[in-house]
Length: 401
Image (tube, rainbow, N blue to C red):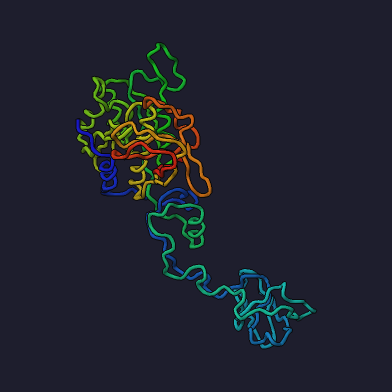
């Protein structure tokens, strides 16, 4: 079996073309953490007219030299005021009120003394003070939020100000999760022999899918039986956008997933990657649906899910993977053990704006040590060509939290 370079596998994922993205309109307050599928363009100016930014008195600045002004009327926010500013007069105006016709300045209440029906100016202000200009917030036909933006509370607030009730968003992909292996026990299932182990892969994958904006469908554990696995994957492919399996992708007598992918007439994207942990990884597609076969060991399946499943969830929402690489400094040596791309669990801290990593409490062993993922965790990234690293060297890491 020929294994491809890790970089090639990532390029193949990045270059996947989705023929038709799934979109829908959702009620505005339900769109948080979805990806916007349309540009948000304004249909008006904000504000549409000069508006008061404070409580105070609107007047024509040419009268500032008078030192005092008569109060001719009151202008509450939201009212339709017809009164105009006259020479030597002002209108009491509140935050958010339209500036009266003939005014160009607002003097705050803190700057004046009220004496019956007039104000005495104690502290003058420049022309235009505390007046929000037309279009200060945004102008008509301005693109405020571009397509493919992840919606958070600021985007919801801006869209509400534009009276957008139901923006168009990309649907979050449905991800069916199943683990293969006759030795696996579900949560709560009683162990009947020493060869049985408790399944964790399907549960951590469900958590990963939720964290990174997919919709998980938990299908549990499937016995090492080709017919059962074929039926499970086939049915899952019908009801979901991605089917992710763990186990059954190696070279053993009971590793059926790779054969089933061909039997379901799926197009193979790649099979086998020079990466640690993992390497026995399969990605296949059928139209705009995908099957990812991950290794069975818990640490392997977790890391490879982050490297391959998470970007695919983003891809189906026309978005970029949230997995970002940053620079960090080693606080202890790192021993490079293979000529593969390696992703090694490490602890990270942020000191004076710079990341530092160590391996305190991280065990060296097989790819089954899931406890290495506990704590403030990052993945140290090393390439096929990297060698062991010394204390103080700068390295690349992926921060997971």
